[in-house]
Every structure is written in structure tokens, then in C-alpha cells.
Image (cartoon, rainbow, N blue to C red):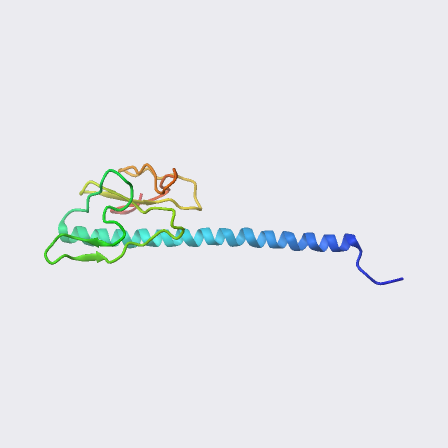
Length: 150
């Protein structure tokens, strides 16, 4: 009698390997979503700090245009119009996947910063509501204002 593996044994081992690989892939993709969301939250906090420094110098928050959504100071940075100008941020952070916008809405006395996170489905309802936080139709689900998360 020859010693060898049967076809059934090989199929069982291949199935187990596939299931383990699938579980690893799912865990990895969840980890990547959480890490991108952590970067988005950190970016929002950095922008919020720069906006608060702007307010402490100018006694108001930078105002935002009605359309399009996004940051009114663009991606170049946050600079005021004083002489000489003060630079609060030299460059605005970008979304890790390049398809989202850091939304900012302000009337000068209050503001709302928002972003669409991948790992949550809730929608925040800031005082200055953002219709969308990215180039598709996804609404903001993580928002911050002058006193922290809304």
C-alpha cells in the first residue's frame, strides 16, 4: 500500500488555508480603515487648533464660502491678512484616500469642521450643516466645533 494524501485530505487543508487567509484579509482591511480614520481625526484636530490660533489673533474665525464645500483657505495653508501676515498652518492636511474633503463652515463667530469616516455610519448634524463631506454624496459623520466634537 502506497503512502499518500487522498484528494479529500488535500481539499480539506486547502479550504482551511483559504478560510484563514480570508479572516486575515478582513482583519487587515478593518485595521486599515481604522488607521485612516485615526489620521482623519488627527488632521481635524490640527486644523481646529490652527483655526483657534487664527481666532485668538483676529477675534473671529475665517468665514467660509457657501459653495463648494471644503476649506475656504484651500490646501496651501491658513494665513491671515495682517501686515506682516501670520501663518497658522503652512499646508492643510489631505485625506488619506484622496477622495474626501475636510469640510469647514463658518459665519465668523462659530464654525464646524467635518469629515466622512469609513468605520462609522452615523451622521453628525452640526449647527452649520454640511450637505456632503466628499466628492460623492456621503454626509459628514465626524464633526468638530469650537469646543470639540459635535
